Image (cartoon, rainbow, N blue to C red; front, side, top):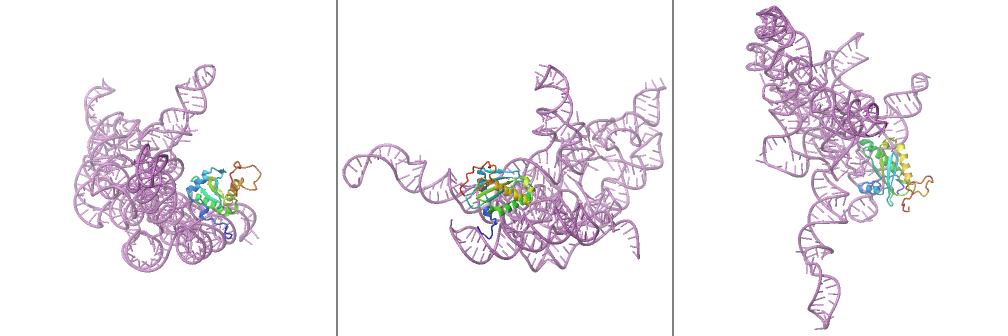
Length: 139
RNA sequence: AGGGGGGACCGGAGGGUCGCGCGGGCGCCUGCGGGCGCCCGCGAGGAAAGUCCGGGCUGCAUAGGACGGGAUGCCUGGUAACGCCAGGGCGGCGCAAGCCGACGGAAAGUGCCACAGAAAAGACACCGCCCGCGCGAGCGGGUAAGGGUGAAAUGGUGCGGUAAGAGCGCACCGCGGUCCGGGUAACCGGACCGGCAGGGCAAACCCCAUCCGCAGCAAGGCCGAACAGGGGGGAUGGACUGGUUCCGGUCCGCUCGACUCCCGGGUAGGCCGCUGGAGGCCGCCGGCGACGGCGGCCCGAGAGGAAUGACCCUCACUCGCCCAAGGGCGGGUACAGAACCCGGCUUACAGGUCCCCCCUGCCU
RNA sequence: GGCGGGGUAGCCAAGGGGUUAAGGCAGGGGUUUCAUAAGCCCCCAUGCGGUGGUUCGAAUCCACCCCCCGCUA
């Protein structure tokens, strides 16, 4: 990692082709929240990568575009803080577009934290996630 | 000063930090496909929207044409083209500036006009009115002015006329025709003639005039894996076994399969199309104008699971609260995001700027 | 992005200028029955996605918007 620019967002950390999206969906691991649905898959190193799904129910084109830009911005800033290495696909619900940037940021970070619950070496000892028995390869 | 009408335009401004896309330059790395870093430049709209029209572009089809189908619809221009625009005509609204108008044809034909009404199209006479006959009920005839029905009933007003009436006659208006004048034309004006030809609906079928091949960048073209499959060629082999090491024998294959080479089509993916154009700005000239001509200057997005975001500061506008002017605190700043490119139309839109014109009131 | 199709009672829907906008399912009320189901009768109002226009008259014809569903990788 380049110490000078820790918050880069180059194209290679995005999911850019159908096969990559299909691979994430094929893992059949997801987390459903009121505001979004999160699919993920371990990609075996290389850091976190992001794919976005925002369908027309969310709003008109400029609303969808702004939402995707904000989600990318959140991912760019927080990507280095998260442990592990995974591909994420966020499927946004219509209510997500009504959130301000700060609320959006909090809800995305919360979602990532929750799906990392089973992986984190210091798991929160509260209620275990239903998918706690992840076949997590060693870090 | 108040009210109203028309046109053109802007659609937050400045700065900072992090980040993204494209182009250029330099450096480093490379498995030569590219990757990374630094610097510079550029990076959504007036509607980018709806996809309602028109064109360019691309492919397919096509001898020419007709039929079918669709579109347009006062005239003349503008334009690459248009259902757009400009000017003009006609009709309607407004005191006016101005605004609005699907504005060809119903004597080419077909069809429809519910209910009511006598009668809904070249048909008819309910109540009336008048004349004749009859004691009378009524009958025969004349009439379409009046009543009544209806969205719509054979032109309107007035005078004459008559038994009562009627374009029956006359004047004006309307309508039709011919001629003259103005205008490129739509149309306008005038003279004469005709007593009137004739209901409405063409966003009913239709007729007339003009225009239109079909599809759309997911068009179309190039490269092209893995895997499966197509076509053509090359090469003939494998197993077992007998004996005088060089000859045989049996079985299978020999149009299959396997091997190898070549060719062509497709898929994932990549590249081109992809942005310099009916382009923008300024000036001059022609034109009432839309627009055109000439000259100069400029380059202003090219993504592809899809680049414009996040945060902070100052200012502007606006709303609410506190409040003595002043200010303080908090909130908001529209409609909305390029996807091949243009010309229009339509729809959405906080707020604001400039110019011209009309009406009313007051002052000079 | 491009190209098609469609909006009629809660649901499925016919009607394509004429005055009560068919019919079926569901729901409600009544009748029948000892009771239930079935049957029979009645009900769902100003309404045909909105806004204008044409017409005497519009769900129907025309224009413009809104929404929904397909096709095209």
